[in-house]
Amino acid sequence: MREFARYWRSLRCFWGTSLAAELEYPLNAWIELLSVLGNLAGSVFVLQLLFGGGPQLGGWSWSGALVVLGLYTLLDGFTTCVLQPNLSRIVNHVQTGTLDYVLLKPIDSQFWLSARTVSPWGLPGILAGFGLIVWALLNRGPGAPSGLPAAGPVLLSLALLFAALVILYSLWFVLAALSIWFVKVWNATEVLRYTLVAGRYPVSAYPPALRLLFTFVLPVAFLTTVPAEALLGRGSAIWAFGSLLAAGLCLVASRLLWRYAQRFYTSASS
Amino acid sequence: MSWAWRVARALLGSQYALMLEYRAEIALWALSGVLPLIMLGVWSGSGAAAAAGLSAQQLSHYFLAAFVVRQFTVVWLIQVFEDDALQGRLSPFLLQPLSPLWRYLAAHFSEQASRIPFVAVMLLVVGLAAPGLLWLPSAGNLLLGILAIVAAFLLRFLLQVLVTTLCFWSERAAALDRLLMIPYLFLSGIVAPLNTFPPAVRRLALATPFPWMVDFPARLLAGEPVNVALGFGAIAAWCLLLLPIGHWLWRAGLRRYSAMGA
Image (cartoon, rainbow over all chains, first blue to last red; front, side, top):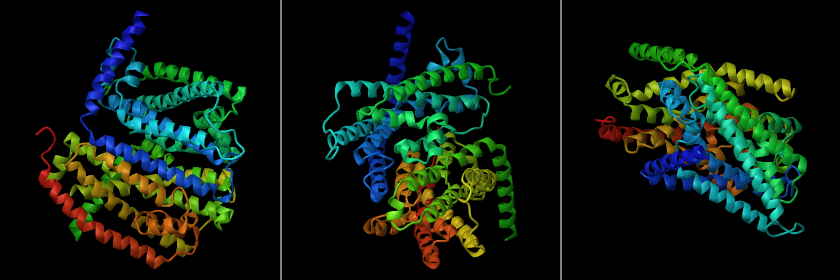
């Protein structure tokens, strides 16, 4: 318990200082807001083009696909807030040797590397994603049960969203930790950002081979499609269980990989 | 002339050697360009392409060509330049009797050259996973397509030079590049063929420089009917428009540059 309180105090200190530093650049808030709105408008436009051939995309209705897009936007905002500012720096620490100082600190190094800073510029994305989800649920069109879902599906989808956040974090951390071996991998984490774009669309919209790839290799399906299904009242026990299991496995894998990777860290000049 | 040749050879040679040292990075960068292939997956599953008059084969040719075009028109000038300016590495470059932009341009060309094997491997994987997806463009189209890719790359590089010069005024100019990415992503034809756009949006897109960067070279490679003269003309016109602006911004920015920490 004392340990927990110590980490909590450290976290408050970390985030307080990094917020103060980030607020030095108020122009970034506007840029980020514009970029979120522009990306959202573009994504809705492309989605509309994809719906040009019929009322469904891979068995998903227009509003269902919007929920998926909203979840993607939300996760992207989370990435900008926490993952990107922290984990894209591991490469620099390895390259310049400052990882030494991190490892020497009397605090868990994975915690420090993952939570040292926070950026407020992901908030517009989180809010926009949330707004889009609520809007899509309220406008589900004729034939579908309208209005917000009951408490059960909402709780389930929140749990699945949490699992999605854990999976996303683990993917980012694993890729960032690889920089211990490939020192020069400059911003390997950007790759993840570009491939996770697949999560903008329901996984059933892809051909079968890609569906398997996005479920078992790069678990994009668990990031957006599974929580969206729960939110639309179509959640199934097996997918929910699979999602939680995947989250647990990913987290443990990231932890094990980090402990293994540290054995290969030889500091900068040696 | 011989001086220019010597400089070009030295720059390209050293930058290519440097890029080969970063092989793992280049492989990952090549992997990060899979977006057109992902979009091909979504588009082939929806009936929208057929509704717009595109056959399945036309669709796959278009997106595979867009994939290749995207691979060889990636520009990362601003990220590197921002870092160089902030860390003070720019100062020694500025002392050389050659604009640092030439060094960055050489680095981009070298990176493209070192990308070729990775792109070839990825195309091979696509060909093995889905035989019949690959095709060989006619010699004329291939030649014109490669020329169009180079022209499109130069246009994109020039456009980013404009944003890059803002690094002289702001410490976080790379954030502005994210704004530039948005119209590029949605109007250039990476995520959706321009034929599927509603006519009004399509006219709007064609009035911007973006469709000439992906849609035009990709359609050339895919063997679609395309107005070659208009395409190259548009790229040349945009370049002629951006060149003086970029030159002027660069000069104005250099006068402001005081090296970090000075």
